[in-house]
Image 1 (cartoon, one colour):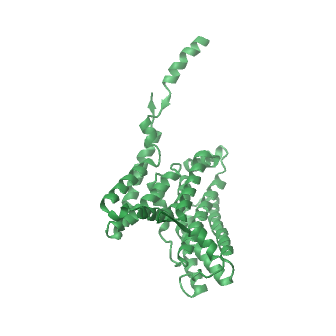
Image 2 (spheres, one colour):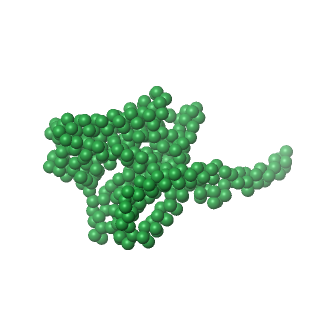
Image 3 (tube, rainbow, N blue to C red):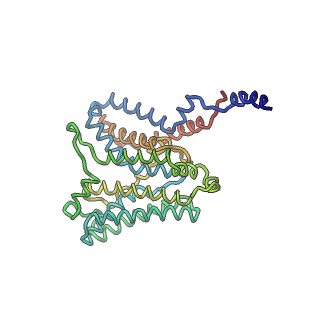
Length: 351
């Protein structure tokens, strides 16, 4: 019996299903975006001389960070199988809450920022709770949140200030501390590096670690792939998805703070449309719209492509109105590439 068992082992091993090395490489969600980023970078280096300086590169990174920070959380949410169309306006809501609350009540801006964070987290919780408890698609729930926040931004701002912009906060208590944290910068070799770029790198690294090295990351992929199956094996689906919505609100608050303290005032109508930029960054970075596939590095590359393109067109001296057309083309192309990559990731080679 033992000899028979031993003789059958090599046969079983030889029939083991394996992925070829090329399939393993191409199945990485970020590979397509990385190739596209290199091609776009080389293209703008060749056609836009102004693009070649270190200062231009840091400006591109800054532009990418303003989209990329929120896109990190949006990407995680999409991997988890949901969307948040309120992500753009909550950035503005966060900044307006901080400015108007502190201005109207005369309190320190730091206190206003903390209360603004609480407000944003509540919005994220309500979005996630309603999606999970009602079964209504997140597209519709967050679309409702989008309109509620947009109207409140305009109505409350006009009620408090008599205009559609927040007051200038540069002379208010707590401004220096908040400005240094959220809108600070420093010089390296005469080139300005914004704190937001470093925060972006940190958030991407944290998200990548969570997805690849923690149980929560496994849960996120599981609920995005098949929520019913995930629930059957003990994954806390409701808690995971509510947490993902709250993470979008948290990073939306963070960029709201950056925008407020970078410019000292906010227009109440800002942020509309940015939710699509976050989704595009995630999709271009390899995240599937159907959930369960993608990673944080790919989303970061997608945001970097956004930064390169938005500024590269300007550096090249072209009409910036073409930028939106480019984004649309990139989105369609990215969806096609992602579907192909997903197909490769599920293909098998018998070795």
